[in-house]
Every structure is written in C-alpha cells, then in structure tokens.
Image (cartoon, rainbow, N blue to C red; front, side, top):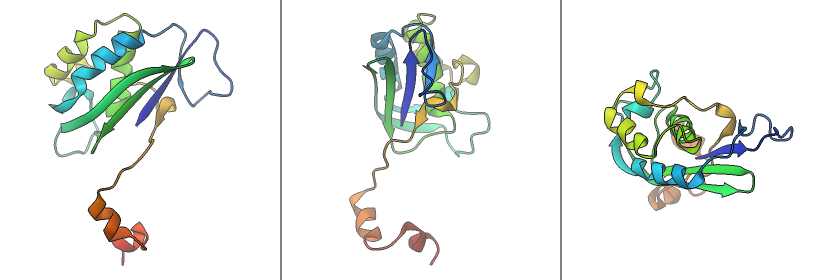
Amino acid sequence: YRYRFLDRNIRSPLRTHHVWHRNRPLDVEAMHEAAQFLVGKHDFTTFRSAQCQSASPLKSIDHIKVTRRGDEVHLDVRARSFLHNQIRSFAGSLDMVGLGRWPATRINDALAACDRSACGPVAPADGLYLMDVVYTKQLNVMLRGQSVGDQIMP
C-alpha cells in the first residue's frame, strides 16, 4: 500500500480526493524513524478498526518507509495481509509525528498499548492506494492460463 500526503499551503485542485492535504511541512525523517517500530510481527490492535473482522490482530509488516517526492510525502507499507483501516491508522499516527505533535517513540508506545485509544486519528481514504499484489510462485503456476474466477468458482 501507499498513502500519499500533500504538505504545502495551497491545495492542489488536480489532486483533490487523491492525497491528504496537510498545510504544514511534515518531518519525513521523524515519520520514517517512527514507522520502523511497526516492522515485524506484532499485535496491531491499536491500529485496527473496531469493525475489523480479522480473527487475529497479529500481522507481520515486512517493509515500511516514508519518503518525500516533491511536495508529497509517501508512506509505503508491504506485508502479506492487513487489518481493516491499518494503513490509514498508521498514516494518521505518523502524521502526528510528522507535525511534531508526537515524538517518534510514541508510535512504539501506541503499538505496545494494544488499545485503539492510543492510536492517532484515522487518515482519510483519499490518500490510500493499493500499489501491487505479489503472488507466490506456486500460485502463479496454478493460475497460469486461467482466470482467478475460474479457480474460485468452477
């Protein structure tokens, strides 16, 4: 997944509903540092929606980075699976770090709390993008020449 922030004073009419507009500069380095607490296998109760239907809050984040691309800040997260609102919860909490309202270590504290009230605000859906789906080699071989629908419903 990728979450896109636009951190400049003036909104972009061409990117309305495509980014989360922040009218102050975000501290990308602090956000990236804080995001590293989320890498690995953790109980992500803090960062899941109350309506999440996943049987377990245990998930593994393989890779997370925060980078600047011009006037945008990108949060990129790679994992095998995600919880409902997990990336938007990450984005809202990391935004608090980027704005200087939270120290980077507060992300680790929030993670350890396993309590939804320790999470920052849930970021709007506007900036969230599914960037890629990677299938295992075994699944690719199984699906070769057939549509996914054929595999699910014969």
